[in-house]
Length: 246
Image (cartoon, rainbow, N blue to C red; front, side, top):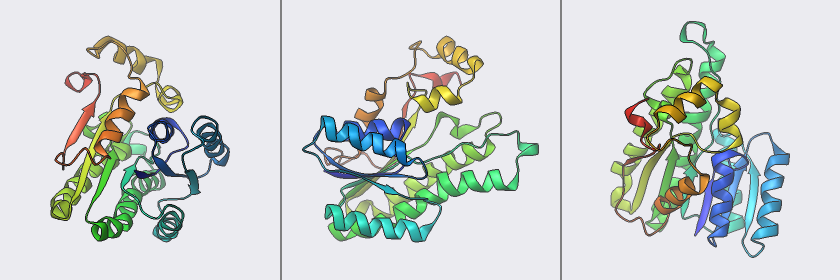
């Protein structure tokens, strides 16, 4: 399987790139600014899974022209793509009354519009091949979170985007689903989490722990695989049950 993963240099994206290579897949992934982090992923993949093809591409997904250019490069390098994991996203937190136009637009343009650009571009490949899988990474915050109006709106929007793809292109053999992660043991999670939020999670999550990244990547890669032929238009939570308390 050939995968294309946005935001693959850190966090869940990085874990998914390496998990895919470990399972024997070839992977194209993107990063926006952190070239050194992308290089570290490439080095780890080369060292551990040298027989797999793993390649990085610099991409600001807010720019549809860049998306088109990278799409062309990926097809030249890999021949085809079987699945797209739309993981790229940013945070620009602030209470609603003081949230700037710029912070609203940057989060929406990256997390929602950028992933729309990616999905629209790769649809032509999937339609031509009469098969394909999209997996969008949303968030437990999609229903709202204090100080995160822009982030919540962007992650909720991915649910509507994925559902529309599922309905429009299911007849073409294309499946699109959303994964809603809770808190997982990544450096990005612990950088963003306050001590109060960590305490809340451990107190109210029914499993009383954060998730392991391998638990999440197994789900993502299953939904991206040919083995998933009948799960389409779904929102799959991997939150340890905290949806009931959050």
